[in-house]
Length: 420
Image 1 (cartoon, rainbow, N blue to C red):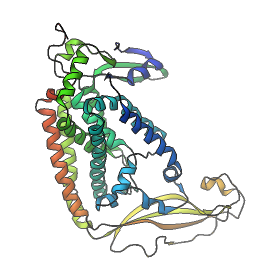
Image 2 (image 1 turned 30 degrees about the vertical axis):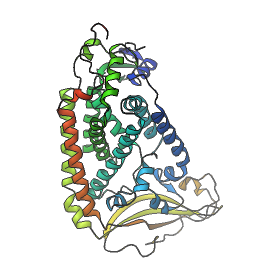
Image 3 (image 1 turned 180 degrees about the vertical axis):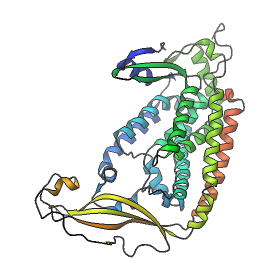
Image 4 (image 1 turned 120 degrees about the vertical axis):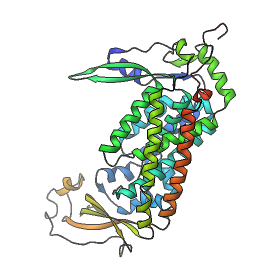
C-alpha cells in the first residue's frame, strides 16, 4: 500500500528510499527487469572494449569501427552499432544513473502501455536520440569517437512518464554541506521533477562538452509523442480506478491531487523550449552537412605506444583530433613521428601505460589514424533528421499542450466519490 514519503531533514537511508520510489501501479514489469538485466550483462561483457578507451588506454584502435560513431550514424549507417550502443555504458556511475531512472519509471510506462509498445518507445527513442546527436556532433566537429549509453532510450521513457504519470509523487533530495549523511528532501509531482531535469539538461548543453544532451532531449520528445499515440485508453481507465482506490505501490498521492490534471505549466513551457532547441540545433547543422558531404571524417590520435611482454601494442591516448579531408588515410595506422624511447626496457614504465607488468619494450610516440568515415549521405541524413525532428517535436507539443489529461493515469475525475 502507498505511504507518505518522509521529507524534510532526513538521514541518508531515508533520502535514498524517498528518491528511488514513486507512485507506481500494480502489475508485472518483465520488460523493465529484462532491460536492466541486459544493460548490466552487456556492461560487464564490454568492459574490455569500452573501459580502455575511456581511460585512454587501449590495445587495438580498430575497436572504433565496431562502436557507434557520430560520423557513421550521420552517414546513414551503423544501425546495429546504434542499437548495441543503447546497452553499453561509459562507467559505473553512467550505468547506475540510467538504471536507477529506468527502475523508477520503467514499470509505470510498461504497465500503462504494455511491454510491446513500451519496447517500441525505448528503441525508437534511442535511435532518434542517436540520429539527432550525431548530426549535432558533426556540426560542432566534436571529436566524439563513439556514442554509448541508454540515456536517449531512458529519456524516451521519461517523456512517456511525463505524459502518463505527471501527478505521480516523487522526491528531490539535496545534500547538506559539511554533513554528508543528512539530506533535505522535497515532495513534488513528477511533472515538476522532470521540469528540473530539463533545466539541468539545458545548463549542461551550454556548459559541459561531450555529454549527449541532444540525444536526451530528442529521446524525451520522441517518447512523449509516442506514448500519447500508443496509449491504450481502456488500460488507462483501469489504472485510474486502481489509483483512485489506493491500489498502487510507493508514495501516496492525495485524493485531491488525483481530481485535477497534473502536467504543470512549467513542464509544458520546458517541453516547448526543448523542441525549439532541438529544431534550432538540427536546422543550423544543415550548412555544415552540405559542406561535409562526400568528404572523409578522419579521426587521429596522438598516442604513446609500448609493447607488452606478452605481445601486442598498448596505446595510451594523449590527444584526439578530427580532420575533414578529401581522402582516407593511406593505411589505417599512420605514424607521423617516432620519438626516442623514454626509458630502456624493463625499468618500470608499466605504470605509464596502465599495465601491472614492468617488463616493457621502449616507449615511443606516434600519431595514428584511429578511424575514417566517408560522409556519403550526410546531407540527406541531416535533412531527414530535421524532418523527423520536426514531426516528433510537433507531435510532442500536441501531446503536452492539447488535453494531455486524456491519457494521464494520475488524473481521476471524481476520485474520492463513493465507489472510487
